[in-house]
Image (cartoon, rainbow, N blue to C red; front, side, top):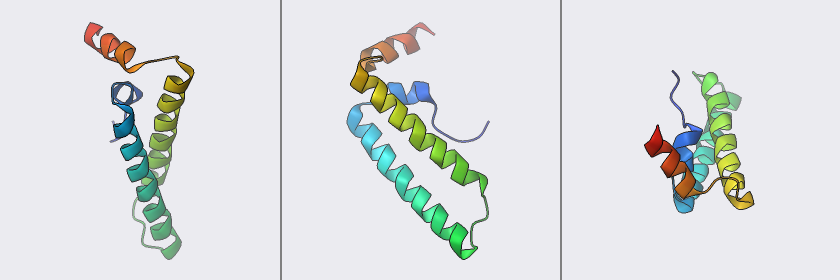
Length: 81
C-alpha cells in the first residue's frame, strides 16, 4: 500500500497536530509543483497522494466542526477494533 495518511489515524490526532500536518502537506505540494514545472519531478504520483492527504485532513477538520466525529469517538472506535 502507498505511503500516506489514513483517515482513521487523523481522527485520533488533536487539532493542533492536524493543522501542523496540513501546513507540511501544503508546503510539500508547493515544492512538488515547483519541481514539476522545472522538470525535476521524478514521482508524479506523489502529487496525487499529497493532494489526497490534504483533502483527508480538511475532511476530518470539517467533521469535527460539524460535530459528526469527535476525537474521543475516534479513539474509542480504534480501541474496539
